[in-house]
Length: 169
Image (cartoon, rainbow, N blue to C red; front, side, top):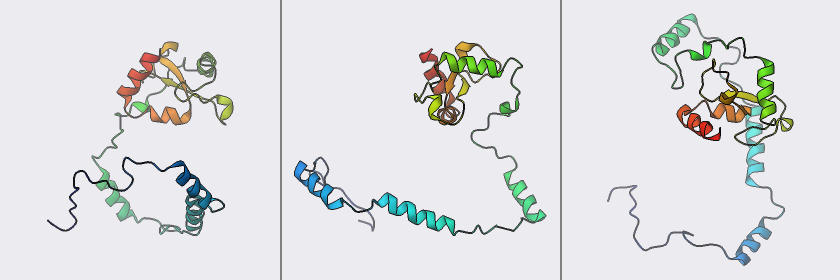
């Protein structure tokens, strides 16, 4: 057997696998933690202090033209995995107006159709999402109201989201 290889033996319980703490044990653990700061609050404070005092190694510096050229050459021919062939550069049709988007939000009761967040709970207007990802298809049945977070989600795995939203309508 080599170093670092661990063979798990059958029929031997490891730790709490398959077991649960009794109610009495849960109560005792709860009491022992009363008044103590949670790890997350301590960690949050430590990380905050670290980043407040952190100075970027590039602060106040600039890349030389030679370095910029090297970086440019190293990125040639490489495309980001989410690159869609420049379709995001296509302009929206003239009929894509604030009135159309507002009518879609109103139809959906100003609620994100994925997570259920209401527009009053956020500090921006809900987005209107094209279900088939075609900017030119302004059919109201192709538009759905989403919050920013959910709208961001739908830009990945587009086939899944197309099927998902198609079933909703």
